[in-house]
Length: 109
Length: 118
Image (cartoon, rainbow over the protein chains, first blue to last red):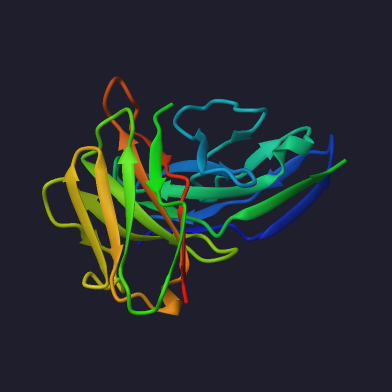
């Protein structure tokens, strides 16, 4: 079974502060991990995937297989980063995607 | 990127009636589409995988006779909520993978359809 846990439902930081959204997963094989973002009144969209090793909008996420984590980080948060963030896991390429509960990030001015 | 469109965006219906929600991939073909349900302030729960030209695969606990899925073409999947009841009120979201035109298999989401059953 595959499971994704985001321990923080709400996270609030000030503009310019570092931010880390936590994500832990449970999966017996080699997972593919993603972060999706949903801005207010917009559809869900892909932020980044671990295999790409990209930095999108200043966000990065490193897959730590030892700790089974895929935390999302940004050194300096911006107000426009305020959104709902979902961590997701895919077991076999192209198979079903399992989402975490989501973390609502608020960046205050 | 690729676009997935849902229709209607919101619908209100009376208890006992059936409601159809459409999911279209606008600029790519999708042999597989996914239907999710999202309750307020909760995560997306996968309901079923819609397969073009064959039966949908339902997740455990999802009533296939209640939530009818039809994937008649490579660009259209429909979800019909039959004999809707107030507890079926929710936000329904579809997604599709773009494997065509050099796509990396990224999952694209529709804007969602909010169903309210009175």
